[in-house]
Amino acid sequence: MDALTQKIRERFIELFNSEPQLVRSPGRINLIGEHTDYNDGFVMPAAINKEIVFAIGPSDSSDSKIYALDFDQHISVDLQNISKVNKPGWANYLLGVLFQIHQHGHTVKPFNCVFGGNIPTGSGLSSSAALECGFGFALNELFNFNIPRLTLVTMAQWAEHNYVGVKCGIMDQYASVMGKEDNVILLDCRSLKHRYAPIDLSEHIIILCDTKVKHALVDSEYNTRRAECEEGVRILKKHYPEIQSLRDVPLEAVEKHRNELKGKVFDRCFYVVSEIQRVQAATRDLEAGNLTAFGKKMYETHKGLSELYQVSCKELDFLVDEAKKTGKVLGARMMGGGFGGCTINILLEDDADEVIETLTKAYKEKFNIDMPAYRVKIKDGTSVLSTASVSK
Image (cartoon, helix red, strand yellow):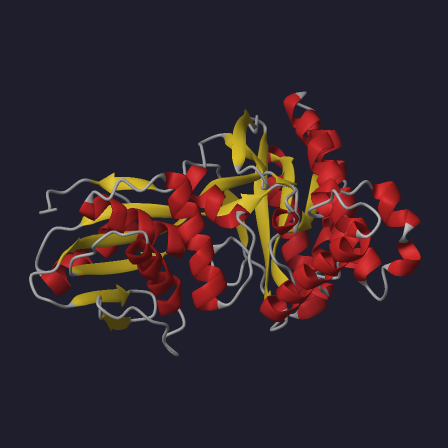
């Protein structure tokens, strides 16, 4: 049992005097395909070895308590009246999932839960999806609801839309639940069907460079981008009634109707349609074992995210530029919603120490911020760590 899991387990026993069931739910990376998921496009995420661990068990009283170890905060939940709260901020991610389970006809009995994790907050590794999915999975295991994994994914997304207020796509939750060790997920966000593709990183490594900034724009601008894409579809639908989303739009159609796509709508649509095509081409690179060609597409994605979709920031742009300058990074780009968080980099493992040192030094000189670098491995999705005997 690793140190994080042991810490969560011991805190549960200390608070509730019983042995919990343990569940882990990972953060995710996305190798390519950013802001395509809510446009019915394709993405290529993977679950990683940064995670949230849940200890859960039945309550011996009528109360249900949830304790957030990292914040040293707790809430009591009224299972007869599950509703949003103003604070603490983390609670609504869980309450939304709980509400969905109730709405699906499952009876949740009183329970206790302790959770904590090692996913760096604000890093773009989807700690929110790990929180939602892990909690839903833990309740499912504890009470034997037999909720399918895909339903847990959509419940978690619903919670983020309706209880948190971020109109996220499906990718983060899907990757957290469906991840497979040493494989990427090739996900069609329209059909919600996926296949796995092995990624050979035997000589290479994935490194995340954390800007340590999280500009306040992220949630509001995310919703704005989604609305701009929907506006593009509304305009293009006049000419192509069959289209349902940007997934259906050829790049030539975006260019042809450029004058009608006012303001920033053209740029947003051009980026998304290009990126959907790029993911499919990048999949072929990966299947051919051509990480060099794959890396070039990562740089192209960043350029589009920065200049057309405008969800980057000076710190992210700087780290991608510096990574490219080293000549040792096959591909680098911003990852996640944007306006901060991490860049994702693929490079030879033998070059990792030198590149991290170079980027850390340059970033410190430019912004006076110490840049953490995370070496991540691709791991399985949400899963049981322990099946301690509990009354179900």
